[in-house]
Image (cartoon, rainbow, N blue to C red; front, side):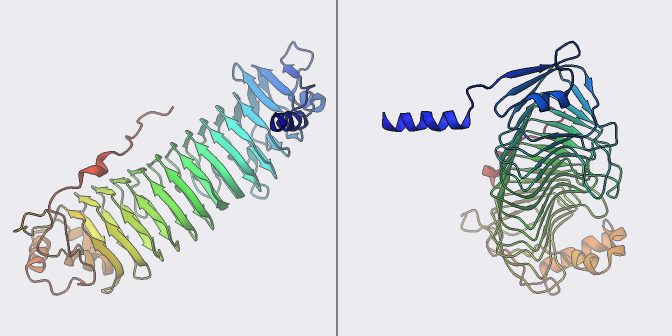
Length: 423
């Protein structure tokens, strides 16, 4: 009873008993969002009923709930940042934000939270904005089930769909993001979760981490972008049950790892990317139980990546399974399934009796002389690779799977299916 009384007193302090509902519409007493913001008090709900609102740059400094009814459109007309929120506990639900203007100094957004806590952006549409949702020095926020589409054509004149800077404890879940520079961008972000999103057709990256730590992304689809995901200068990143697919081009990757440490890549599908995983300076990272299917390069691991463990992965139909720029390796390959493996298993334990070297002779040649790729399907290359398998002399012994699996590892088939249409 004593505790219940204390909880009630706390609730009285947090939730004002005088909270009101203010309705905005063309025939209401309050006809503009700006007037509603001025009239509102902390704890109020502002309901906006349909219509088109182009009121310039709006600033909200009160802890209110904004609810759109019949999908009202809030329009920046390609000139301004639409809504800046400088208050805690703000909810925004059921609106269409359109036309936030381009500004490279201020990073103008459709909705920007500054020094905010406990924000919620849910079930909105963001159309043709420079930046769509922007969190700056914010925490304990949720970005849920939004439709975010812009018209980016190049990196220079485009912003990001969801942008987090110097924030922590943020949930980004169930969003559809397309046609931005980066679909989702995190810089100096920690303890956040990116779950069940579809990010596609981005100019640069579907998801981009910079200088971040202890973040998780799982059950997402990243496709048809310059690169699916880039994790850079970050650590303790958990990447689980995602699909990286159709990221194809001269410098495209499913997953780009640049100077990351102590991370975990598990149960993902890398399907038809130019490069499945590109690792440059990745250290102490586990790559476990993933499927690499029909990629140009499944793994492109540079010599400055150390302490990586590749185990229980399936390599199926890739042009090159592994390439590197060194004959030395400080990484481990163990108990993977390689469809190009031609060894035998005399004791029938499911593990090949002969080690497998996944770096082919032609892959080494192509790494140093990219123009040699024109010979990829020539009989000479096939003969050269076959001779190297029988008498391995030139391929690096340091990159070797001592216990290759004889059969495809089936538990990794329980992967999320790609969604062919936007939500």
